[in-house]
Length: 539
Image (spheres, rainbow, N blue to C red):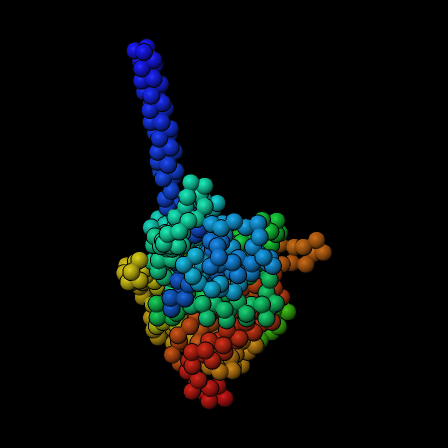
């Protein structure tokens, strides 16, 4: 009997222990499930600091795509069917998470939201040679993107979504879809001096003028701020591989590259003479050619311009007049004025945006009158960049003051507040205002009666000069490649804008570049209402 009782007690104890073990396993399993229920967070967007034009128009981050964020369930069944283009949601379990781009915003509920995802670059990015682009890790490779990589990266942000999930990582009842913004699409960034409307005008004028390899620059006269800079061909930031295979070298910023200047350089020679008290002849007689120590120099088509003064010589673009004027002025004085006008010196807009220095021969390198003669009408060893030339013509337009061009205007913090304002650090009196007045009158008359009439605008007054430069570079068919130019400013009476137009493979400055200048001047005038009252002075 005792043995039976002992056996029964042992069985009871064993059974109780087994029940306890089952309970423990059940509780342990429940606790494991509970531990895996929680919030799931997914990053769906990343942003970088803005680059703005002078009027705070975004040049990047200006393309935004609408995305729908939906969790499937009874409340969102119609939305899911529409997004998936299905007649029913059979086979799609509740808690299924969907993120997809959609042109039409979805109905918003606890489990469905619309969000905008920023695209760094739109299809047609303005100022690609200035802005630059990013590598695959989101770091700047060139341009503003590289020069200010740390600043732009400091304004980066992330967009995330969060929702409650079960052990299977499927959405369950909770607070629904939550959007988490971690400084995403912050307004912080960099403001440039460029004006997107003027940039568009310059781009369209170059296209209408048929210039395929060249550039156009627009500067503000008073400050030398760069308002527009177009280099052609442009490259597509979203498709860099095509540019790599393009023989026209789209990555080359032609505004920063050096070329022979041709006749747009002649006013600089005139400035050197006038500034040094060298009287410009009023009775010079052009025979169409000139012999300098056995080397023959000629005017275009060997045209004899006969009796000329300085104004006539500018209007006729007479080579022999400026050769004679330059020889009387002397190489030292000409080279000295050229330096004051910024030639032979690179222009650094940022650490990454630096023009070449071009080539300004030193006076002791000019060992013959023939060398100096070539330089006096913008040929020979002299090479200038379009940006240098724009800054030089700003001297004429701004009472003889040289101001180095710049592109940075200010910075903006994450609160949208402006700070760290920029201005040119290089400014000085290059020549007297009286000298500029004389030359500007010649350039103005040239637009009315001279070789540059094709550049004369209809809605404002202007002063300027064309140029056609030989390069010594011949094609397979024996034709020499010509660089053609127009440099000028408007309105004549109260200059506000300097414009330089350049064609790397042109015919003449009058045919190629002058009409582009005219279109730019007219369209800026119509856009901004600049000095339309001066139209009666052109008659």
